[in-house]
Length: 214
Image 1 (tube, rainbow, N blue to C red):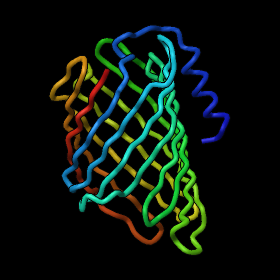
Image 2 (image 1 turned 30 degrees about the vertical axis):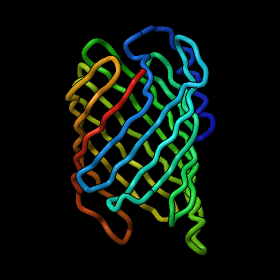
Image 3 (image 1 turned 180 degrees about the vertical axis):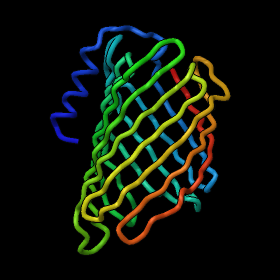
Image 4 (image 1 turned 180 degrees about the horizontal axis):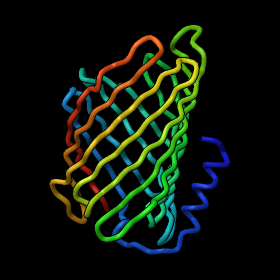
């Protein structure tokens, strides 16, 4: 994603005027457990804002199936009451190196039943832990859909230059429990990748995510 695209996403966040109070709640933390044994935790702490925009500090940690740290991230996120958002994160991956990423989302449609958002991201990969490996970029995007905040679906794709790799994912979400302060979701999906030398099959994955709000 270029700087101009990021600025356009930020302007969309700030310029929108419609007010949807139920979408303004802010996530304090979440924990996810997946069927392949991996897991992850995320935290968001508001720093400043008003009734339309909130700037937060964000952090996350991912763990592999042996419960070892596989990635740790920290950054900033700007969230708008109308469902738009922009984030900047730095990630450290043991055995690989560092990533610097910018991501944005724009809400395309929302009413009492339907919610549709488009998302895009750009990542600068610096494999400092791999001798002589060049830096490379990953660009991607996708769509997220929710029906009555109960059933959701998502599609995404990404391309990494230099290594010429494409990643694809498709998933669904079912909300099992929701209150003003917490939420429990069931997630299921498929993902695959291809390179000039190898193409994976669609790999399934399921999991549960628990989120806490304030």
